[in-house]
Image (tube, helix red, strand yellow):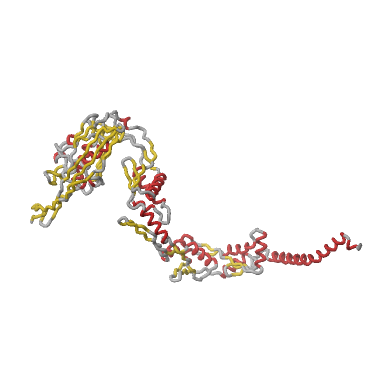
Length: 589
């Protein structure tokens, strides 16, 4: 066996072969490392080569030398010119307080390949031997001033998009798909301005424009139209105590995001507006009794706080019910949190007056001043009246004499088949509103008369047939207190808003009152217009003193139940005569 054929010989042979191959590589690596060490040593306190700040090469310079060179070479531009291709906008750099920090720029150049990350720094230093790196100048400016200027430019270089919209006209849904617009991309523009300033460039800056499109496509428009058509003519009623808030189809339309879903903020805003009318602090009661009449009364009231989030959810749920069913309307009770007062109403009296048992309301818009005055005066004389258990209440007896001697002014009344000026015109507004409150309270009504003709005041917020005329000594309005406790009549006339409210307080015995929808029949056209000469009016003056009204028969059923048993029922019938409009023509010369 030859020596090199042994195993040891074979290993030595292969080792020598590897050594021959790796030695040149090791020598080359040593040379490169040596050169790189010399390179790093040469630039120990200098900026690495091919490092530019702006257009200035700072390679091989120390920090202070680089700062001086930049100071001497860089000139702050006097203005920036922005263009969208058709318009040009200038920004003077003095208006944005532009300045350069050359020392900081030199420091940034020095630390370009000295970040502390050894691998990144080595790669960057090698790269700088053959490739150029540009960094921007350190700029300082007033961002607030620049933002204001850009906002002005944005307002001039802007095509406002037209949002989609929906209108309901005579039950028909019309959808406008909207139109796209354009606006400046201010984020990109600010970046372009920053880049231009960092390189001290005087080149025009192209304003980046972006499309703003909130319009509907054909399919979206058809989807919206189909959705809206489902709730046309429908409504949502929100109930709380005697208050009703009605959301019509026009209101519901505002809640819909035409791109899908709902505008929560719009629904929330609606709940806030309702809350503002309902929210209240707890109220302790007051009950001052003098001379058989309550002179001051405040019922105990719970504090109320509307749950706006739950209200919003109920509105959305009600909306979804309307669009997915054949129901034309739906309602829900307003969700609220109650906080009881410290004292209850029954704690301040022993008459059994502790809660609201009846409510009536009417409005009297367009009343002449003397009528508004009489409504308030008559209301004040009924307000605070106590009716004992088993007692029959007479409106005329309680009100007393109605004449100029008792403070009433002249306003239009119905007398002798005519509408004439007479003392106390407007008193029937008070008896009518009390009639409605007693109906709501479920008390037996034993005397009530309708007006001779349909009066517009009593149909402003009500169906026809819910009026009650009085004129002492007759006709009168009477009812019986058939409860086991006193009842208190509280009335308030709001002359500013032409609103009258009657509240009946007592103790509920569980009775529930209901009335059917008034039925209108035997309609007769209004009588021909009448013109009468009046020598007290100047020649040529025409004054309307009466208004036309159709004749009709109106009836409704009134029923009161307790524990399912009818305790009182009555049918009210009103026969209204047709009426003529009457004009006075002046003849005085």
